[in-house]
Length: 200
Image 1: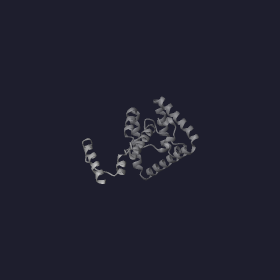
Image 2 (image 1 turned 120 degrees about the vertical axis):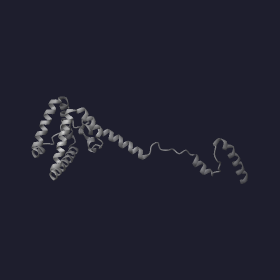
Image 3 (image 1 turned 180 degrees about the vertical axis):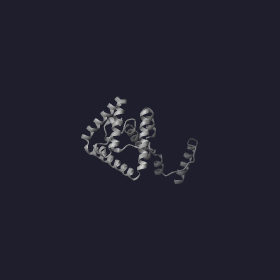
Image 4 (image 1 turned 135 degrees about the horizontal axis):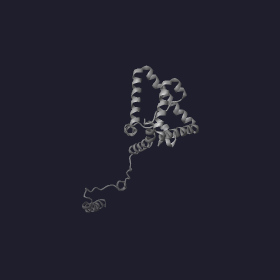
C-alpha cells in the first residue's frame, strides 16, 4: 500500500512540473505545511528604523541650533559676574550689541522678546534652566583655562571671531547660509525644553 501511495504521489508531482517549472520532491506533511505558511517579512529592519528616527530627531532639532549658532547677531553677555571678570570684553560686547540694534531694529526687538521668553521659561523650569547655566559656566571656565595656558592662541581665536562677526555684519544673508551648510553637530538634548520661539 505504501508503494502504491508513492506511485500516486509521483504521478501527481509529475503533472505539476510544467506549472511549477522545478524539481519535484516528496515532503513530509508537517514540513510541507510549514513551508506553505507564508513568512511575513518585516517592512523595515530595526537598524533602518533607528537610523530614520535618529535622522528625524536631528532634523527637528537643527532649526533651534541654527538660530542659536548663527553669528548674525552679537553674542549674548553671560551676566554681571562675567562682566566683572572681563570688563574690556564686556564693554566691547555691549557696544557691538548697541550698534547692531541700531542697524537692525526689527531683529533686535525679536532678540529681546526671545530673551524675555527665556527668562519666563527659566522661572517655570528652574531646575532645567540652572542645569543649562551650569553647563555654560563650566564651558566658559574651560575656555578661560585654555586661554590662560596659551594666551597667544586664545588671542588668535578672538581675532578670528571678531573678523567673522565683521564679515557677518557686512553680509548677514551669506553668513547665515554658510552657517547652515557647515553646521552638522546635533543639538544639546536639553534644548528640547527651551521655548518654542528659540527653536524656530
